[in-house]
Image 1 (cartoon, helix red, strand yellow):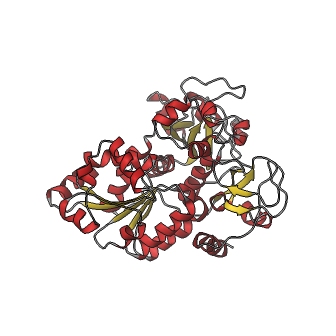
Image 2: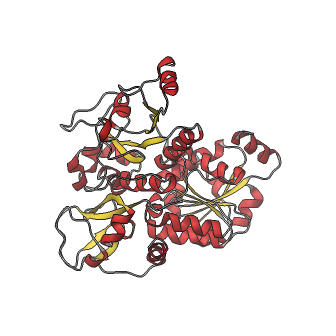
Image 3: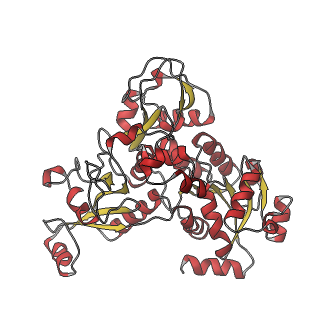
Length: 444
């Protein structure tokens, strides 16, 4: 039975999937806009550091004051309404909430929220992929130990890429490469929240209208988010990553099967079975027609002449050899698609992507020369960006995960372009750091 029909059945039975949302920013708001239009789900509560900001975002997406007027979670369940609070623990502890959607974008806080959810028998759909990037395999392991499901969020590109990879392997195709698109030029790695909108292609007025966070959007532009999301894909799909960071080969959609072949066969990848990000800009800054900037893709190989001939007979667009074919989805709709994860987890017990391996890591890398005593401000900020590296390389250099590069101070000078190690910074105790250390021991 389709997920939609299962949702209709839950609605007819008066037994909706009960959801707790932590974080009601841009991504959360996009999901909120779809919930009233989705059968068989009930958003019981929203936890946000600013309940007033959450109410404003709810009004922005069309919710009425009556829909969010419940004085507590029990009333919300009884009346089919929603309670707003600044206490996330109320959501993870309530026995009738089935799934927590973690949507804060703050990786250290997200780890606390996710572990708290597992401790109280909740499934988790994790939108904060930054947390998954530095300890996803451990989070998945904790979920399994608790008998719960831990999932990446559909709508975000990693889960969509996982879906394409699953399609390929289920159909019997070997995955040559998989990834997403991005607008990229090398100097974007030095971008800051002050320069993001010009480089992104929005006016400040457009950004303000959409309630867009410049630091968050800068984390996409400076390469941090593509590295984070590529890490999530590699760790979920058992794919390798480039040995010295993403290459961002420029290509139109038509050229993806050409450039995502291994170098030994005329492409740009080190080998088969890798993640990569395709740039929508030529190296001189010219925009590429029919690009994949907002989309995802997977390149597969015809291993026999018969399959190659089938590609030709059914007019599949391939590389010149006829053996490499790319399936793609040109757009992703971010928070508008999270309902797919919620339904899959609740109704099928299946994640839409989960970290089962440790193949990749994102290491904080200096945007400029850093002085002793400077505080790092994490992804999208003014001090560091995230570089994708093989997990083995990161372990060997004691790499500082980008997700933990928040508010800690530099203890020795670091040159621009240098990836930081734990020897370069102070260690601030946290549950997230403990989990990272546990994962290092597990994979030592």
